[in-house]
Length: 285
Ligand code: PXG
Image (cartoon, rainbow, N blue to C red; front, side, top):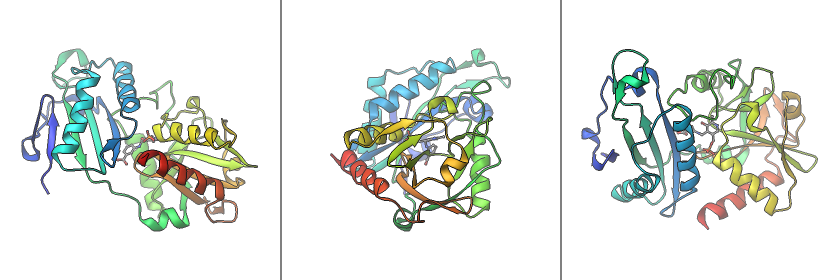
């Protein structure tokens, strides 16, 4: 089905939504993006996504040519134009057209694009039985090389790890940082439960600070579940009572097997179930 796409200042049919081959977003992956979701016609944490987009853009010295208010309106308008009530939104800002050289100063007209589509979820079975994941040999890129907190159009680091997961028959893969500590998965943050306490790696482990991650941490606090950021090793995961991943697309999804080690008794645990319920209530609330 043909979609309607927001491009800079108006909504156009998909076949008219075109980007130049000289756009540095294509040539160098020079740009930033967000993946958002709407539930019952309301975009979940739109402001947080816009703040993160603006922070990513600032970090790469990219000035977004529209205000947050205008982009927020564009997100809602694009969903409405496509008659989407429960939808997935991809918000992209490219560096714009430039010469065949890296120099971002020799580019113009950053492209602001909003795509709204239906959301492709993991099969229901994954949520009921839990995921099996493996550790990728591809490490998360070091912050000193490129901050993982920037949600850039450069996702090859994650894609290399995703390939490893897929080759092992898994839909997600665990990524460690350069120190061998647990960072996150290719498009999801990770949590474990140990002794009734919820643990997740801190931002300086080299992760994207997920908006779903933050929501789940808030829900844990509200439910009286002790939740803290902690440096985690694979040993901490293998010996955890429960494990789950969070992300805009996946929401909250249990993990029951990591590198062939069953997590807990190999079935999704009670704290994961509680936070999943609370998350569903929050997004629909
Ligand atoms: N870590 C990484 C590396 C991500 O890219 C998350 C964690 C989760 O963050 P949020 O804010 O969504 O809770 C992400 C974001 C997709 C897709 O289309 C999803 C992400 C990235 C790229 C594509 O499913 N997840």
